[in-house]
Image (cartoon, rainbow, N blue to C red):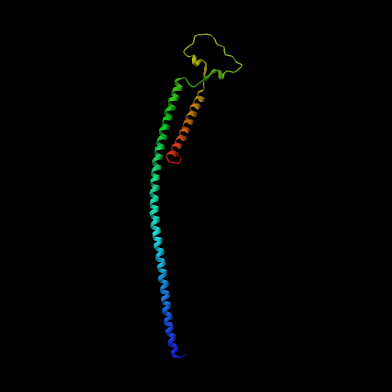
Length: 171
């Protein structure tokens, strides 16, 4: 190989090396710029997401506070109603005892084949009781308990409906 060709080859290699260096430096800078843009976009998105999350958390906290307040109101109203029902039950039982117990007409208990002889006479002060039969104490207690349970169930349903309305689930 002639020396002159070696000079051209060396110059070509230097130029080729310089071009390769410029190319790879440009590639590196381009990748860095793309990465910087991507990082900036991600940072902006992360900040926007954080602000949105904080705003949503504030809304959730306000809703939770509202729900808890309404739950306490409904619970207090329910307890007052249950206490009133209990007081009514105590009064009803006392009234029943004072009236001589629960009574039904004696015709309900009489057999169709049996007749009742009625003697003439003056009307006594217990005439209203004479045509009735007292219920057994167990049946009386069961009936009053059943009525109390029906009142409790009704109150529970009323409280549930009040809760649904107060929470805004049904207008």
